[in-house]
Length: 530
Image 1: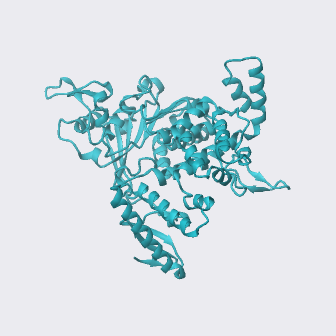
Image 2: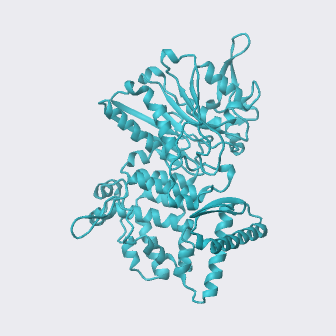
Image 3: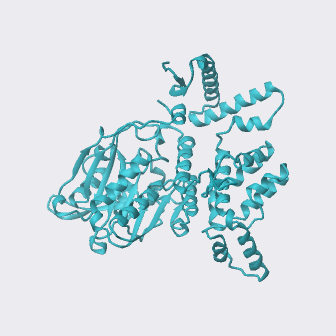
């Protein structure tokens, strides 16, 4: 262990952490580290569980239980505080409070419109209620989180909370289902903590509303939390709690700096060719939607700087139910209800085996697909034995005599990242349709560059991209950009309408040393691995 004056480097379960620590707290902290490390190792051995997050949660629960038992008062509120970072609190609190805050100003109007529609037995109410809410979603329940705070505890609070959830519009109901909100309620009631969770998210010192909190004199007491900020909060929580091991590191969270760079690489080279009109953006592994929303903002700003007015429509597909729900919820909260309908996801909506946009073509596409992840479970939808049955993953290549032959464009079953790239290639617009063609920015590790024998799937993909002059540039990024992994990553840029001076060329850029080290916040330094 080593230390700076106010920080201490410690190891828990073999992983290093930097923790804020004054010199006088050093001995106590080391004792706490020994306790947590011992507890986690014991649980990992007994349960044969190797997923660090789950072991940590179980250890935290054990330590909290031991503390409460020793205290002898059985305080449930202390228990809530002890597991303050639990997944349950995140799911129920963040989403409910944010939705509640956005709908607060039109709540009464929605209730009045609902009463009117029911009185006249109007069956199709969704459109009218959206208009009353002035949002793409609404809640017809008499309850708000503030009213629930005043409810009785136990089963009464449970019933009231369920009634509150049931009042949301159908598009929010899907989000609640993906988040598994209702699955957690009875557990919270049995532990007598549901009320405490609601209280925490109504803390007067916290504002997650899109409107500022003002004092009696009209001065801003608490600033508003805009949707960009809320999206960042969501993504940070996903990064902290859903990355379970190194194999899937970075799956849920792409650093904003990387996303902004990808957007610039997509748009800046064609800035003078962006015309007023409609543009379609797509991400086939959209996660929480960060890439789409950052790219949308960048394109709007670029067009405006050139005196153009553009209409942008977002499309995305995501297999993880929770991250899909966050993406859709974020768009709803921004007032982009139409765009939210273009986001599809869930366990049955894999981009590789259940393409939801088969007939679509897009102007711009960007993605950070999972790499080093098996697609064997989806192979039966793509191949029948050795024969490729999905046209997205077939390519035409010339043989030795120049005759075109249809070739397999599927990589090894252990790594599906190039499948996502070819999936985007299949959705490129012909240059004549828009004057721009299509541009793609996709993040990959080194495997896409080097793996595969000549004549194999990976080799065929690379050959197809180069021979058809689709590959524009490959940029090596600095290491340690992605959460929990230091592997080398690359941005692949594809373009089917290269300018004359770039035709027949592929630009290779080493940007591995072109970075500035940002100053981490105290919070980040306390919790992030060294």
